[in-house]
Length: 197
View 1 (cartoon, rainbow, N blue to C red):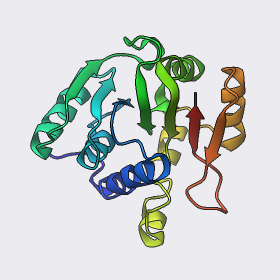
View 2 (tube, one colour; view 1 turned 135 degrees about the vertical axis):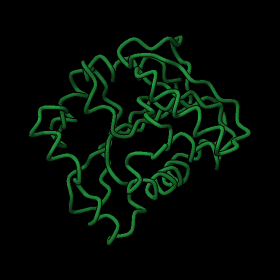
View 3 (cartoon, rainbow, N blue to C red; view 1 turned 90 degrees about the vertical axis):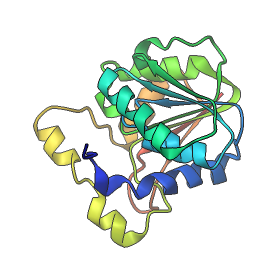
View 4 (cartoon, rainbow, N blue to C red; view 1 turned 180 degrees about the vertical axis):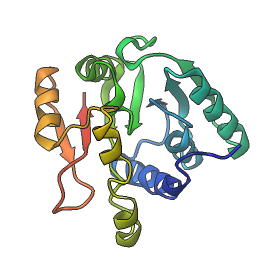
C-alpha cells in the first residue's frame, strides 16, 4: 500500500531528534496526538525508551500507524488509542511528553484540544504542538517542502491554520501562561507551541 506524504518522511527523524535534544525526556509516557500514520511517534520511540501512545480519531489512520510501528520493529511499550483530542481518555497528570505535528489545524475545537493536552500533561511535562518542519531540516529540503499542502487545504476550507499571534491568543484563551512559540527558522513565524506544566 503506498504511503501518502512520502515527501515528508525525512523530516520526522529530525523533529524527533530536536524534541529529544531540547527536552531530554527519554523515558516515561508520551502521547502522539493526531498521530496519523504514526511517523513522528515512531521516530521518537526509536531514540527513546518512552511508553508510546499513538492517539487518533480516525480508525484507518490508527490501523496504519500500528502497521508502521510493527514494521519499524520497536521494542517500546506501544498503545494505539482511538480518541478525539477534545476528550482524551487519560487521567489528569498522565503524560511526561505530548507531541503533535500537523493535527491541530484539523481539530474541531482547538481551544478544547489544547486544554485537554494541558490537563493530561504531568507537572514538569512538556507539550510540543504545531506543524513546522523542525529546525534541523536542511535549507534545501525546507524550501522544497515548506507550505506544500497548506495553501490548497486553506483554499478548500479543510483546515484552521493559525499564525504566530493566533497561537498566542489560543494559549491565552486556554489560560496557559507557561508557554513559548517555537520558530523553525529565526526569520520565519513560529509554528510550534511549547507548553510546560
